[in-house]
Image 1 (cartoon, rainbow, N blue to C red):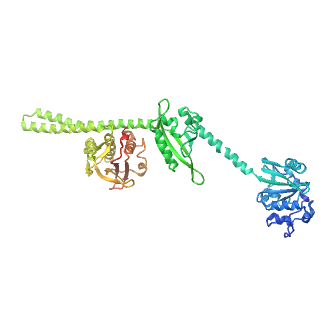
Image 2 (image 1 turned 180 degrees about the horizontal axis):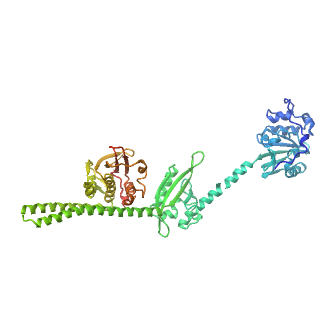
Image 3 (image 1 turned 90 degrees about the vertical axis):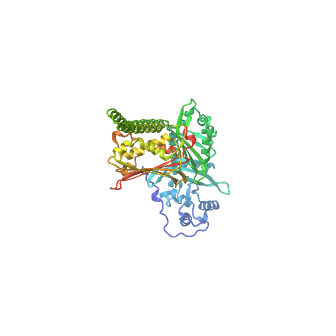
Length: 546
């Protein structure tokens, strides 16, 4: 709103335009010192500076040397003098109201500050006011401004109160910032306590400082049950064997600056196991010192169950594909045996009968090999065992032999590795079944299937292990598809594919602490795809078998 016109404004002289003249008694070289020395004080109730009482001169010089916004109101008219630090707070009132009464200068707020000044001048009552709304005119409008200020009586040698010392500070912005901070805090507290995530706050030595509502509900605790306790002694860890030791180690690592994240299966008091994606993060102050640790846990039980169901689904699909391949592989030699037995019964030539029976025996041996490999294919022991690379490749290639022959695919073997690798044999056969099956699918019109093995070193980690390669000269994979081949449900085979094969393959490789890489080309005459699998010789620890 626009300010009311000030009837006294016309009588207020303009600021001096001449050069400042030196007046004895006023010291300093700031803007206000110069203005006070140059001001026509004889036209004010204070009179010439030379006639000012010593108390007024001393107080004014003290105010001019003060770095904090300060004013002097002198005499019954509260004549205004102020320092350089007060200039920004005076806004457009500077410098025109220098030497004028406080009522003229602060007309819009006089109903608030007038009685306070009168009380100090006439009764000697000092006062302090904090975060008080005193509206003032700024940029031509009445503006809400919050102040913290004090009024102190200025005593002359006679004991009479000659004026008032005002020390003040505009706290509007500070108040607004504090209000906003109280509001970031209220919102954060609301998010913190309504979040479904399990969140807490720890000291650097692992003592619980706070925890949100979700984490309390997990084991039916109150804050009083947990605050002040070591984090590793909280119920959700103690219900689960070994979890307390793991979290104690995680706290030590996080306190040293490491961001910790791992899957943590925890038991509720009723025995239900919940799987969490658990993280522990250090929080630093402005100097970089770690002052808190923030534990956070996200319930991924449903995700893990879904993943398990998908993996079971892929296993069933893989078994179906395997059964179809086996049926095809077994059916051909059995048909041959049937035909050979029929021929042996329809001839009386003993040499021909012997040849028919020899061929039938060969076909039955082939059936025996297939059945033996099939029985071994999904055999899973309670733990990993050492397996040679040629055993893995032979078993898988024998299953695909019929498809390989029918598609006129040439198989090239370069199996140079002699050291066995510790692995879950059935899972590793499933990995090669997927990779070789995909390679055969990519060469419906013939091509070369290259399988290799060699001992190798994984350069980034320096670990020794076995490198298995499955390469084809098929149509290759385009860059867009390459980005998604390990995603669940992504398939390029239409209804004949589940989109889970390579996703499950990647999971098996991760379980063995291995590395699976792929590259592909669609260049004419140079097309094809290469999968390279690195399995560290010490990749599967005994605990992984559980």
